[in-house]
Length: 351
Image 1 (cartoon, rainbow, N blue to C red):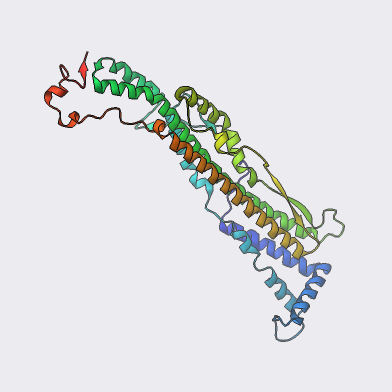
Image 2 (image 1 turned 180 degrees about the vertical axis):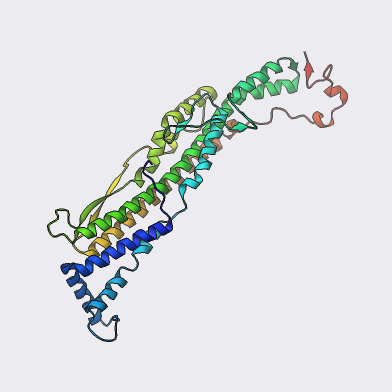
């Protein structure tokens, strides 16, 4: 996503402290919020709960500040629970899979993630510039000068290689897209929780303004629900073209990305955030966080289901993805000179 910025655990801790400090400040400086906190502190004191000093009333300024600080002390931990390693550190794995796919079949340009074009893998100091099919074609031409049971088996093996290559390329593409979707879930989760913290601060500040028309209310938009669809839609054209090419060549293939990763909505979900008091706003924020956690869990379960489907497709296509050895004959190990003699042997001989 274009506006993604990685947030470390320390960043989330700092944001949580800003929310906590804003909640304390608004409570102690706004007459209405101050009065409510006094009432809550007195209620707890009357119920025999510990006060914040052995002397004086629970609602005295100093004791009330200690009471309010204790009430909101857990807010930073609510934010740090979303801390994850930077998803971008895993991007080389995604790029590696895409380059494998591009190497297997460069004739189909692979453009995903901001229209990025993946080039074939470099082999030594040179770049593999042609599809592997071009090399198998060259080998088949050379095989025309050989005959025998081994030569016939190897020629048949090469004929199966095109469809195997396409299925292997499709395997690499779907693995890359699945990993990309997981990384996108993490990126959007971090973006959403950061936006939630900043929005909460604004809502808390609005409680100070009696005549503000949006006092105490806002709408939080979660984007994590559209993480998988965003990747699937962006990659669908090349993935579906690849699937069609596989079916045309092999008669069957691994399911297209549209069947593996869902492109359906919703792509965003609104979560109300607000309340007439500081505790109400904080409770609303916690509810929004719970909804965000649920959304992330749902997306990851969806991804796990997609991987199970994909695994079944791979299992059923394994005989195409991995070709059997073209020829098995113990005479290659134990044969006599006559067996292997190119002028009169039975395995290979020059026409």
